[in-house]
Length: 107
Image (cartoon, rainbow, N blue to C red; front, top):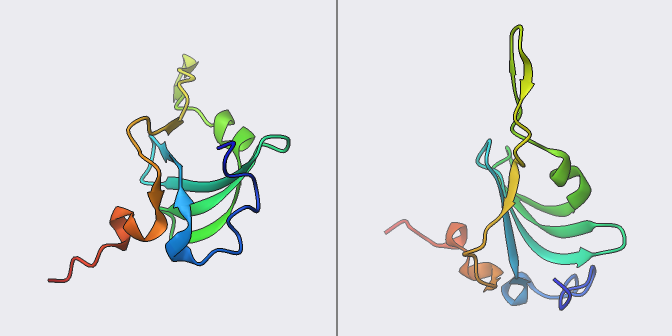
């Protein structure tokens, strides 16, 4: 994300915004398509899908890193600790309008 510092794409029209990174939550349908990143604050900006509304916004990568898939069993306690949010290694940088959820599948 070094080529996309925080704020570098904020003045662009959505058709010109490049999404270089995709993160996904193993425990839900939430995906973060990140367009900008500040390494000092570890805050990224991008488009999130999978919540009630899809929207542009900021996200703390430290917060996402703290999420895990630990399972709690009665009498045993917590087992696990597998990271819950992962980097999609197969995602290629894509312009925002070319992302799959922007396709018109009506006909």
